[in-house]
Amino acid sequence: MGEARWVLLTALAAAIAAVVAFQVPFLPAAGAMLGVTAVAAFVPRRSASRRVRLSTQREMRRMWPGTGMKMTVDALPTPCFVADGRGITRYVNAQALAAYDGVKPGDPLSFSLRAPSLLEAFDRVCSTGDAERISWIEKVPTETWHEAHIAPIYMPGSNAQNRSHNLPDFILVVIQDLTENRRLERMRTDFVANASHELRTPLASLTGFIETLQGPARNDPEAQDRFLSIMLDQAERMRRLIDDILSLSRIELKAHVRPASVVDLSEIIRHTSDALSPLAKDLGVEIRIDLPETAVRLKGDRDELIQVVENLVENALKYGSIGNYVDVGLSAHPEDQDLAYWILSVRDYGEGIPSEHLPRLTERFYRVDVDSSRALKGTGLGLAIVKHILTRHRARLEIESEPGEGATFKVWLPALEKSDEPEQPATAQQD
Ligand SMILES: Nc1ncnc2c1ncn2[C@@H]1O[C@H](COP(=O)(O)OP(=O)(O)OP(=O)(O)O)[C@@H](O)[C@H]1O
Ligand SMILES: [Mg+2]
Image 1 (tube, rainbow, N blue to C red):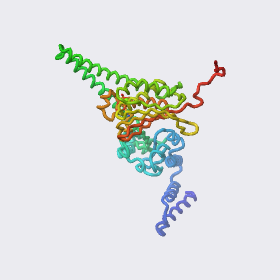
Image 2: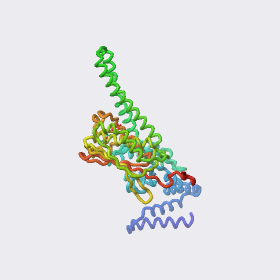
Image 3: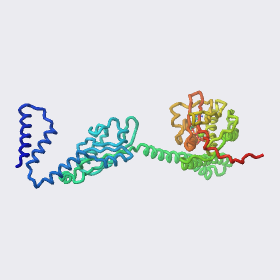
Image 4: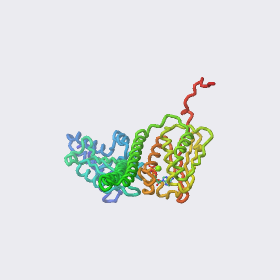
């Protein structure tokens, strides 16, 4: 036994004696190190390499996750936690820091992740070493859907005992927010259900009249005329609905492609108001137009912008007819030094829209009063189409209304930038 070993043994004995006799505050880590070193000093020399290996593994576990793992976790696009087998958070990426308040390495994972099903799954992965995928819903503050993938991590050359019991050294928890996906899924299923329902009603009516014409009304020319005219109305209603659905899906297809052509918005407003003047006359409403003197040129798709103006003015005429007037205006609004907007406003003086309906008006098939919309031949898709067209034009829609005061629909359309103007050829001047 060398002299150094005796020195260490003496130091250990002295430390123990000091704690027992003088109640010296004993730092557990320092004590353990001293103990480990002292005991190691007496282990026979032939296991030296194994000792080195063990302490390297311990050190690796203490230091882990290393730079490589941190870089990988940082590169993940969703919140990601690395915890040890005791459930202590060891590392989190920036997405986790942003999504979970007060998350801190060193704290128990349960401080930041509170969903009971997630914590139970975490415990199962710790004890079985089998990866799990679970999903859960959080109700507060709003309903949100989440999914977590919980995977075990084994260190290279992991402790043999851990390996034989399949116990992971660390656990990786990757969380995904599924709220947007679920919302889109729900919208799609709602859309199919609503569209089928809207088509089923006129179809049922058509079938009923055909049976009547084949049976009781077979020899009644007067009833036949009446029923055929109702059938034509129902067929028209189905056609309008199918046209609107197709129009919506066509616009959705090119939602991300901004129109390239330059159009004159004043001309579009004049054209559309003329086209709607027979309807205005039928409803006893006057359309008053207030446009700038000069052309208002901006980037847009002419047919789609006609659809926007048509939908807004038609709604104002139909739902605001008791106000007798509909005002259509166009004015410039400088947002800041570089960017300017044209504001198209359509104002009616009808019954207005209760505020709780305003945020939902652009949803497909949403109507304040389904019966009156149907009676006015509405499909409930007009404003949904408007919203999609405006998104494509980088424009936005604002709706203001007070019950009893009518409604104003404002469309903010980006003005033409210098770079959008087609180049004028140098020889453009002609007699
Ligand atoms: N100016 C308005 N005043 C009062 N209510 C309105 C006005 N504009 C829209 N609404 C309400 O918003 C609902 C949705 O309008 P939207 O244009 O999307 O559908 P619609 O007019 O019923 O059918 P469509 O436009 O497809 O013919 C309407 O049913 C109506 O209840
Ligand atoms: Mg409409």
